[in-house]
Length: 255
Ligand SMILES: NC(=O)c1ccc[n+]([C@@H]2O[C@H](COP(=O)([O-])OP(=O)(O)OC[C@H]3O[C@@H](n4cnc5c(N)ncnc54)[C@H](O)[C@@H]3O)[C@@H](O)[C@H]2O)c1
Image (cartoon, rainbow, N blue to C red):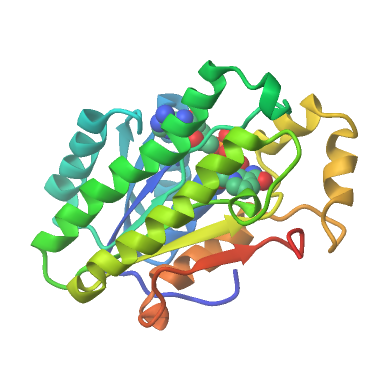
C-alpha cells in the first residue's frame, strides 16, 4: 500500500480478522495508526494477528466472536468501546465459501450456514456498529464485504451469490437510513484474492488454482493488501462523499 492514511486517534473493528483479507485489513488499519478490535471464531488466528500488530508497534484487542450470534456481536462491540472509547470504522468481513454445487444440489444446511455467516452476520455487526456510532460525535464508516458474486451470477455458487447480493442490498438501504446521521456504509466486492479460503476453494473445484488465475483478466490473483487499500480509502475522510456504493476490486473479473 503506497498511500498513507492517518487513522490515529480512531478505532477500527474488523471481523474475520484471524485470516486472509480480514488480517491484512487489521494490519493496515493498525499501520495507519488506528486502535484495532479483532473479531473472529478462531482464537489462535486472532492471537497471531494481534502479535503481528503489536510487533509493528500497534494496539489490538482480540474478541472471540461468532458473528451469527447477536449476543456475541453486541458483546464484541461493547468490549471495543469499553477498551478504546468509541468506534470510527468497521470492516464486516467474516464469511464462508460454498462448495461448487448446482442450485438443485444445494443442501439446505449449506444454504443456512452461508446465509447466516455472510449475510445475517454482516447485518448483526452493522446494526451494533451503527447503534454505537449514533451515540458518539462524528458518526463513522462501515464497509461490508460482498464479492464479484454480489454483482453477477457464478455457476455452482447460488447460495454464496444470494448472500453476497444481499450484502449490497442491505448496504444501499442502510446507507440511506443513516446518511443524515454522518454514518457511511459501503460494500466492497473483491475478485479472487489469494487467501486460505481461495486455497480451499481452488483445491475443491475442477481446474484448481490455475483455473482461478485464468478467470482473472489481469492474469493473477489479487493480494489481501489490495483489498485493504480500498477499505481504508472507503473509511477515510477522502471518501466523505461516498456512501451506498459497491466498489469492485477484482482485476476485471466481472467485466
Ligand atoms: N478470497 C477471495 O477471493 C474472496 C473474494 C470475494 C469475497 N471474499 C469474502 O471476503 C471475506 C474474507 O475472505 P477470506 O478469503 O479472507 O477468507 P478466510 O477463510 O481466509 O477468512 C475468513 C475468516 O472468517 C472467519 N469466520 C468464519 N465464520 C465466522 C463466524 N461465524 N464468526 C466469526 N468469524 C468467522 C474465519 O474464522 C476466518 O478467519 C469473506 O466474506 C469472503 O466471502 C473473499
